[in-house]
Length: 169
Length: 177
Length: 155
Image 1 (spheres, one colour):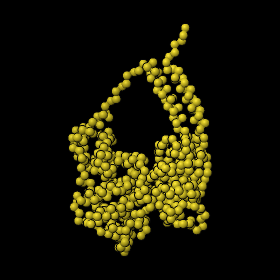
Image 2: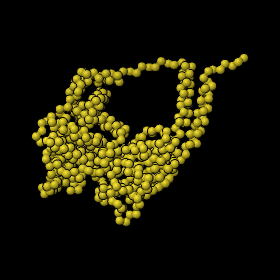
Image 3: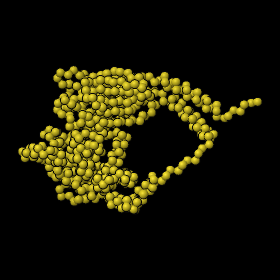
Image 4: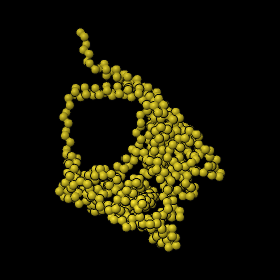
């Protein structure tokens, strides 16, 4: 049984097939024991999960939990206090001192971050990924300096046994 | 505020249960439940009764859990096992589990086994399972919620169910030895 | 009459002068990045399919791929593109008819890489790519094989 057929069985179980297709699957199940066994396995799993959340209870008392929620709501809704106006000279003095500190830090940063090689003093960069499909894994091999991003592209049900979806050629 | 407190009391277990199913961590589930209630209060004006209040607040906690899981995923590297699960299509080759692994079990025991088995799925597979089986979302809606294709939803759901069946069968075998 | 010297002013001017000098050095070092992009094909077969003349990947790439959690036994090079990206610009490397990779040099070893598959952006990634390091993007291909686009920084 190929993968597409297996997914079709699942869609049949989940009521995601159109009537005509569902009817075809019913006929298929009547003559294919392997398909019927797989459907039964999927059905058992669904039944096992039914109502499983019913016994889960929040492990904090009603009053305690509510007090946290209420406190957070009140904190977010409290108006922010207005800052007192700062005299101009004090403001200028306040700017010069941090400006000097920042200037010294920039110099230190420039001097210290000279790359010394692949495993040198280069700081770890922040990695951001914006994904078209959130089904991606990232793996980092720090010693080899390799980052792998594994994508679900093409989507799993598009990886058919032909070259249509082949990105290589 | 008193009326909102009443709503919290009525739905708090369900919201927590959904957060726990997704996060598999008690502390995180409590924190996210709390955050969901605070957000619910802030957005109360936007709730127009197009769904039940329970459904509405559940969707808030689901989205918070998904955001948190995505953030955690960006910060951690996946295990080698998880990588090969995603890249190998291993669920297509698993033999069919013919014996119902949950037959004859007490509810509590079944819940424990499911709990252990769910904890062994990756966050993507578990999330698809939770959204489909517990939240009763259709494939299309799950795809929109998770930001992936319907094909990916179907693959992940299939993998999650097959893996769960195998894990439950293994647990049954261990217990009978 | 002696002028009063306000303490700290001298320090501020000295620091600003150093900043200007350091800034000059940073600009001088903002050179272009030299990269190599490889389109690779992964399989458990020992040779490529009939009619394809892919060659096995180079030893250093093979070693790096071996350390990654990928299950395929053999890797073949389908295409290779060498290119340079000046700071602040984007270069496009066409790996195949259906695949291209856009690389933007953001400066300070930071790159933004977009993979375009069949005309659509598949992934965009921003990260540091120091000299000698490699970014590998990959996914499943037909017949239980895999594709990779490996981006290696040469300079």
